[in-house]
Image (cartoon, rainbow, N blue to C red; front, side, top):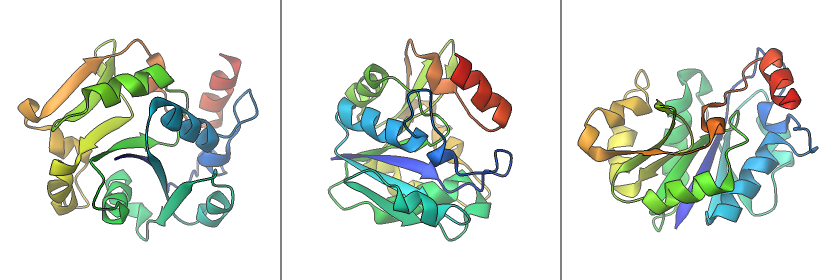
Length: 190
């Protein structure tokens, strides 16, 4: 069983509100959109990692059949949320898609391509030669991931290129990163 792990523990200080609850032009939140795309692509379960100050608000609005976990140390960065997720995943989890909540428009076909390439390697989608999200991490890398120091990042798992599959996708939205109100305005106009 593959899980989608939606990273939503950031404080969103530049935007001023929870990114997970920002709305797209169709009225759906970033989180709703990601959950729908993940499930439509064949992901079995979705786990959303949250933290203060927006965690409670996000957990109250979780889509049906979505689990949540709380990151007690979000100030340690994205890796700390991924580590929280790994500890929460059940033993039957084969792997996980690591999906930042500020990358909401990844196409279902892209997710299916990533899942289709999922094996014993980390799978990184690329558009125009640049890596994006979501990234697939297989279960065989979980122990190594948990052992990483909080000053490291997921990139530390990708040093051995033989353990990483980079796949080209025709989806520029894997590079999307909504961090500011300007980013959101540009996204809503496109």
